[in-house]
Length: 150
Picture 1: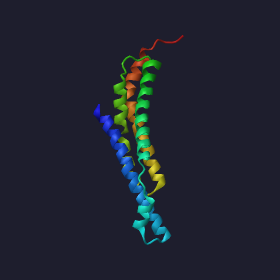
Picture 2 (picture 1 turned 135 degrees about the horizontal axis):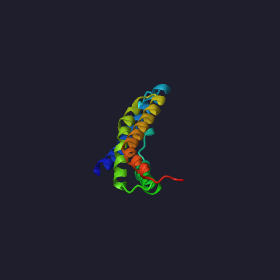
Picture 3 (picture 1 turned 90 degrees about the vertical axis):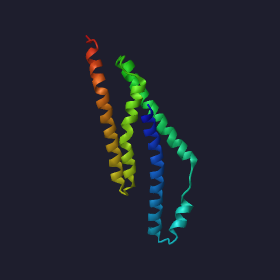
Picture 4 (picture 1 turned 30 degrees about the vertical axis):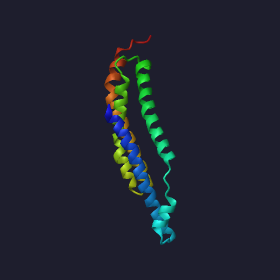
């Protein structure tokens, strides 16, 4: 069960690093556009590290990575009455499905806004396909075993 946890931790660290690099690239571009010769001085003045942002990012990713599998588990267990589902399996499948965000976040260094959105939406689509492929056999079996309603 360490895999999903480390994938999510890696995602948090990668978002912080890529965000910092993107910020510096934007500051450098702004300095060139304004004709400012002291680019390094501008980057240092405009760059500040805020530990509160790190905490909010960690809290958001952690809560989302626990609430989403819990909702999937509760829906399958209580809504579809499937005794086969376990929370740890739901957590593991969800955690491993987030792997597609790692290259997508790294590729957000490309300075085209629409391409950034396409990459993130592509990672989301990949995640949904993986979740569908992992849960479909269990859901199909559960739905076939449900009594027919009259």
